[in-house]
Length: 342
Image 1: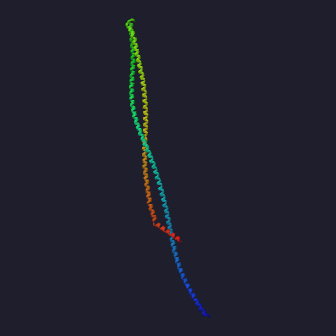
Image 2: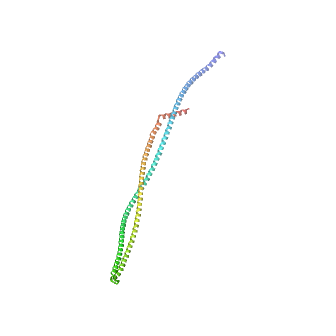
Image 3: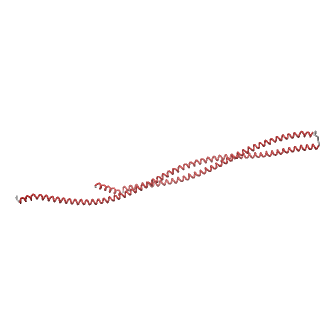
């Protein structure tokens, strides 16, 4: 073959290769352009994603700060609730203590009322006893007055009898003296007249005078016996009435002592009644004050419970329904989605 033919053959074989190369170059250029455009798009996307990530980071920081603030607010609210709960517990314990003190005061009032009732009953019984003793004392006073009157009458009779005895003794002495004087006068007269011993008058005197003397002596003995008996009776009666008077005086002293003791007991019971009444009044006043204090505590507790149940419930509802809480929840969900995608 010649050179021209070889060149033609080689040019014919080279043209399709060139065309392939050109096509490949064009396709490569197109691919490069596409890749460049894709790179641009990817860069723009990356830039937009970086901006969005920065915005998300800022929003996340804001959300975290909001969450922290909300957590702090929740901690503060929890502390306030705990403080309020402690105050409520303290007020409840104080109210329980007040109720226990009220129960103790009521029991003390019941005990003092019972003691006052027993003191009143004992005072009434003592008053009845005093009335009965006063009646007995009046009766004994009447009997003592009657006995004193009897003693006075008997003493008057004894004095009269003693006066009669003295008068009788004096009259007896006078009779004896008169009789002896008369006998002496008669004997002297007979001696002066010189009558004999055998005369009738002398005989009559000798007979009558001893008889009269015997009779007088007998009468005197009888009277002396009567006087002795009367003296014995008088001494016995005086001793008896002295014993009766001593017994009555001892009874009077006993009655006076009993009256004094009863008066002391009555005074003590009256003092105890006054003290029990004053104690019951004081306890009633204290009970009224405690009732008022308990009512005030109950009102305060109810007010606190209403305040806590009302505003705290509204705060809780407002907090859970607030837009800030919704934003925080949505941001936290978005952050979780982003992290899950990464």
